[in-house]
Length: 252
Image (cartoon, rainbow, N blue to C red; front, side):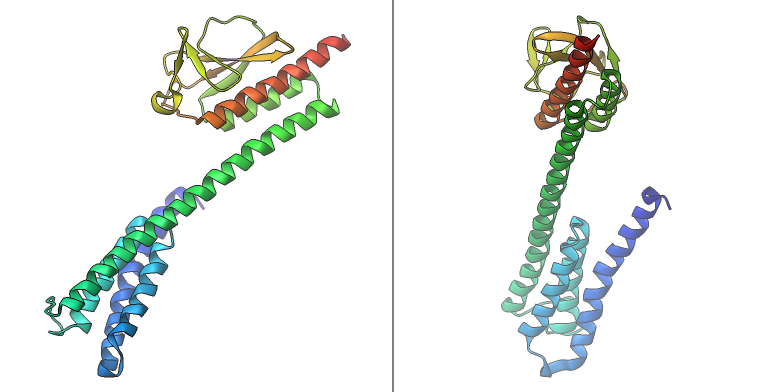
């Protein structure tokens, strides 16, 4: 199944549940009547709002908070079955429900972003280790390592094309070893401006000060903004290719 098609349907179901469950809970709690303390009802609603917000979908958390607030107002506060709140304490409770939904949603989103960032960092490390292992073992030829690095660079930077050029000078904007993009003698803020779309970028393939070629990186169809860590990893991968080509040259 195509996840891109399935995702909107799943999100629609999540949003519907985020609205329906708090409203249903309020109706059920209203059936208990005076036997249920208001604080208990509020705690139940808070748990439902937190559950929706914890999915990491900001809209689901807000929808659950709004539904819980509306249901609390309509079913559990005087006058019942009217969207009117006369007790200041109930007004405070309704506002807190909204704030809880928004706050938990943001916390959940932050946690997911941190998890995604950690996963990306692990992916960068895995790519480096696999290439370094191939170079250290000497099991792969220089050309095979170059092809491996070329593939990894494309996945790492999410650009249109990466190809290897054995030329030692290309006259293109170039990436330094520290991941800095230099164009016209000046550094470019890639995180803000992105990689150039009007020209390719050269990533030198070096070993021991000697240049064995360049990877030509093309991002022509869309603006790509790789982070500094991604650019540094790209430079390290190119160095691994340089090491493999230098070793192969020595054995000729």
